[in-house]
Amino acid sequence: MTAATAARVTVAEDSVLLREGLSRLLAEAGFEVVDAVGDGESLLRSVAAQQPDVVVADVRMPPTHSDEGLRAALVIRSRWPGVAVLVLSQYVEERYATELLAGDTRGVGYLLKDRVADVETFVEALHRVRTGGTALDPEVVSQIFARSRRAAPLAALTPRERDVLALMAEGRSNAGIAAELVVSEGAVEKHISGIFGKLALPSASTDHRRVLAVLKYLED
Image (tube, rainbow, N blue to C red):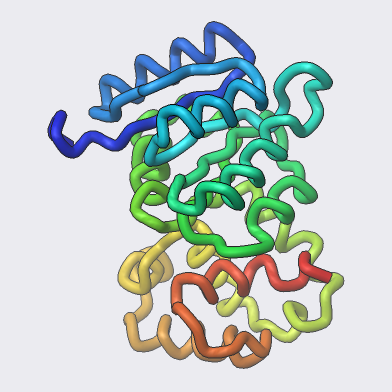
C-alpha cells in the first residue's frame, strides 16, 4: 500500500496505551491514521470532519463503558455508509454483533481484542473490511453456532454444511474453504447451495448471503 493509496483510518479506543499502540501498528502496516479518539461522541465528530475510509472502534467507551462504541458505529453505518467499520471487543457480546450485522454486512467487522495481538490477522481483517468484505472473529462464529443448535433452520444443516458455514462467516473464499476442508471447490459450491436452500435465503449478492446464513436466526 503506497502513500498515495493508503486507506485513511480513525481509531476510537479509551485506553491511551491501546489507542497509541493501534495507531502505531496501523501506520507501520501502511495505513494513514487521520485521528485517534477516546469516546463515541469524539468518534462521530472525527468521522464527520475527517471522512476516513475505515473506523476501528472499541465497543465499550466513556462515559458509561457499556455500548458507546457500538452505538457510534451504528450511527456511522447509517450516516456514512461508505465508511467501513471494524469493532473490537474484550468479550463475545452477541447482542452487539447482532445489531451491527443485522443490516448490510459489507464493510463490517467484529473482532476480539486478543486478535489484535496477531498483527497479520488483524491487518488482513482490516483490509478485508476496507474493501467491502466482512470479518467475524472465529470465537464469535463459534458462539453463534452454540445458539444455533436451538434454531430449527440451522438444525437442518449437516455437520459438513456447518463446517462450510463457519469458514464462510470468517470470510474465506470457496477456494480457501476447499483447501481448509481438503475437498474440491465443486463440493464446497454444492454445500453452499444446500445451506442457502435450507435457510431459505433469497437470491442476492453471494457475499451478503454468506454472512446472512450465519446471522439469520439472530434476526428473530
